[in-house]
Amino acid sequence: MTNDRHPTSKMELTQTRNALRRLPRWPFWIGGGILALLVAAGIFIDLAAHRAEPFVRQQVVQALSDRFHARVELDSFHLSLGDTLRGEWGVWGEGKGLRIWPPADVEGVHVPEPNPQLQPLIRLEEFHFHAPLHYVSGRPVHITQIRLKGLDIRFPPRSNMQKAFQSGNEKRLPSNSLGVSVVIDAVDCTDARFALETDKPNKLPLQFVINRFHLKNVRSGAPMAFEAQLENPKPPGAIHTNGSFGPWIVDDPGSSAIHGEYTFNHADLSVFSGIAGILNSTGRYQGTLRDLIVDGQTNTPDFQLTHTGHTMPLNTTFHARVDGTNGDTWLEPVDATLAGSHFTASGPIVRALKTGDDGRLHSIGHDIALDVNVDRARIEDFLRLATDSPTPILDGGIQVKAHIHIPPGKEPVGQRIALKGHFVLDDAEFTSLPVQKRIRELSLRGQGKLDQLKSDNDSDPIKSHIEGDFTLDGGVLTLPSILYTIPGADIHMHGIYRTEGGTLDFTGTAKMEATVSQMVGGWKGFLLKPADRFFKKDGAGAEIPIYVAGTREKPQFGYNSGHPGGTHPQRPDTQ
Image (tube, rainbow, N blue to C red):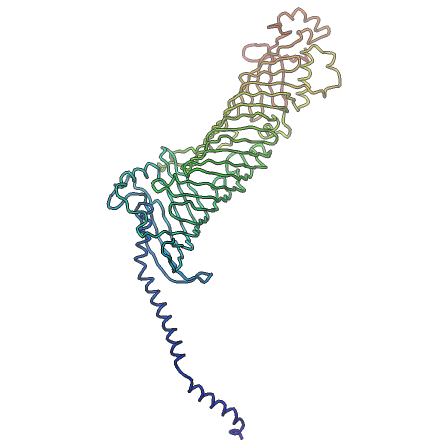
C-alpha cells in the first residue's frame, strides 16, 4: 500500500526533471561568464589601482612641490576602489606622514640649510580623499572630499621665506605639470595646530589649537570658504568662526588674505589674577594672518575685581589691530560702559617674555599701557567696583584723563596697576552722614551762617566740586594737588590715600569767605576779632591750615598748627 499512495506526485516530479534536462544551458553559461568577468575586472581594477599607486603618489608629491615650491615628503600612500553612501563609484586614497618644507630646493638649485634648521612648513599625520572615476577633458577634476587629521602648520618669519625665494627663483617648475585643474569640494580636518613665527627679537610665535575646521570649494589661486571651532587657551572659552581665506601666498603664507566673523562664548576671566567674570564676544575681522583688523563687542554681566567681590556689568565695542605672529594688540579704541559710566581706552596690549632656567623665552603675561578718557561717568560706579564697602563713600559725576599701566605678574591687578592723570568731580556728595554733617558745618561756618548750625535740616545736600592730579602705584593713591570747593570755602590739599585699609593723610589750607571771628561767633568770636588780621590772606576772609586723617569710614578733620614733626589738631567744634 505504501508504494501506491502518491502515484500522481511521483509522475509530476519525473516530468519536471525531464523538462529541466531539456532546457538550454547557454543562459547559465552567459551568467556565469559575466560573473567571472566582473570578478576578474574587479581584481584587475584593484591590481591596476595598486599598480597606479607609485605613479599617483609621485604626481601628488610633484603637484604639492610645484604648488609650494618646496621639498615634499610622503611616508605612505594607498589607492582603492569603492562607492560612497550615495552609491557613486570612485577612487579612495589615503596617505600618512606628509611633510612640506619651506621653499628651499627648486629644480636643482640648492639653498644652504639655515642655522638653526627650519622645521617643516606643514606636517600632516594622515589624509583620506575620494575622487570620481569619470573625467571630462577641459573640465576640472573634482575631488569630492578630503579628510585630514593631525595638521600642524608653522608659518616662518617673512624674512626666511623671502630669502628662500630670492635664492631659488631663477628656475622654477611650472605651476601645473599635468595641465589638469583640480577642485576640492570639501575638506574636513580635526586636531589642527597653527603657529605664526615672527622676525621681531624676543617675541614668541602665536599658536592656535583648532578642534575642527571645514573648507569648501578649494582650488589653486582662489579664496576658499571656511568654518572652524577652537578653544581659546586664555581666557578659556569656545570660539566659532567662519569666513574666507586665501588665495595662499606661497612666498609668504602669513600675508595671505583672510576675513570672517566670530563668536567667543563663556570666556572665564578668573584665570587672570585680580579679576573675574564670564565674557561673551562677537565681531568681524579682515586683513592678513600677520595684520588683522578686528571690530567687535564684548559683554561681561558679572565683571569684578576679586578682592572686592562686587560685580558690575561691563560692555564694550572695540576696533583693534592684531599682529597674528605674536598676538600683540593695539586698541584703537575701546568704547566701554561700566554700569552707567562711559569711557574710552586706547593703546597696546603685548605679551611679555622672560628667559627661563632652560634658556628659552617663556610668556609671563601681558603688558598693558592704555590712555583712558572717562567723559560721562559716575564716581560711585568705579568706587563700587574698586572697594569692598557696601555703599560707595561718594556720589557724583566724574571726568578723568589718565594713563594706565598694568605690567605682567601674579599679584592682583589692584597691586600691579599704575595710573597717572587728572580728574574733575562735579556735584559730589558724600554718602556718610557724619562726613556730610562735617562738610555742612564747614560750609555754614565758611559763610558765617552760624544761626543755621543748630537747625534740624541736616538732610540738605552740600554739593562739592573736586579736581586735581593723581597717581596710583602699588595701591597708594597720591594727590599732589587737589582743589575741594563747597559754598563758603575753597580747600587746597595734597596727600595720599592707601586703598588697603582706606587710610587718609592730607594737609592743606582752607580759604573761607568769613573771618575767623565770624566762623566761631558768639562771645568767643568777639574775643577773636583781633586775630582776624592774622588769618586774612589773598582776599580771603580767613585762610586756615587744616588736615584730614583717619580712615575712610572714620575721617578726622582738624586745624594744622604747623609744628615741626607733625600736626597739632584743634577741631573747630572744640574751640
